[in-house]
Image (cartoon, rainbow, N blue to C red):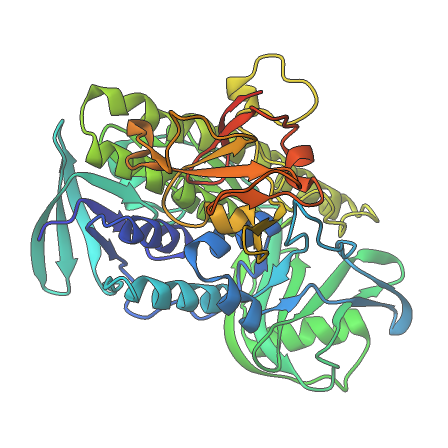
Length: 490
């Protein structure tokens, strides 16, 4: 059977999109030119908003089990211990934010979990399969896939390029990749063991005269490896001997022997944003649409949320084809390009602080992506409180039998959700049809304590849901399939 959606690139972005489409019953193929799956930490910081996405996609428990919290970092200057610090202050969960803290998991481990989840829907990544060429018309896309010496022609309704910063799809479309590559800055990155160091902590080694020109050693979960990161002034090899020399020079220690190097690279600041994220039946997502410096841990997370934004919109267009679906598909570019530009600004500002030696350069407060919103696109004069385009908050509730549930439990799945606060009106059954979401929206009634609750009603015992949504009896809130407020009527 021909795929309805063909995805080029099986990193976190492509995998997220493939899972979301597969659980919606959309026929999807996902191909990747690499013969072997990536093995390295690279994008190892998972932000709280991405944890919420992973909850909906059914991989959160596996991600939490495999990863670790952000570690406490020990700072050494001239070989002497001077302080401990964290990139972000740990926060307690709240009723509206159940996962407030970043999580650490190597990118290759995250991808493996996503691949396993995708396989549960009967879809496997086709590795060593290159998108060689494609043409698009008003009705779909014809692509040529190359497997070694053989080629295959595939017809799909839509093509999504999630194929990285050097995207074949973006280049074939002739879409400008606006931004800069700073050749004056380089960073040496790698994953290796350093058994003389306590793996429970991260480390910063630097000279007292230049404390920001140091080496970060961050523990990776699932073994004894650390991620090594150090600025360098010129091109360099990235082998174990080079990393060892940098460590000894910056730390003043010779008792820490690096070993078992599994991944390394020399990174240059390549900060770019695609001029467009859509060209007819073809879309760009993740690094194919925007590339970030590693400062702030935003790249992987922004790409995951690209896929999460696009999946339900593609389903809606496929189930309700025609001109009426075009504005919804266009909204992918409008929404995600604005977010990518905002996040690139944040990452670039943190990189600038790092280069200038700002003592606050390691602070990562405000990078959790929970406050990213589309409201500026939909509310010209938005004031206080919740608005269309904002992230929909969680809240603890109880069902009619007294069992604890949450709003996120109600949102989980491929549907949109209509929150009804107070009495359910006769015209609002358990589901409502919504062509713009491609499937019926689930109706969830939230009532105050003391109200006679129906079998499917949820009781807001402590008032958290009413407060989070600024609701009164009669308030209606439509939650999009990606967990953002689609419409709010108070």
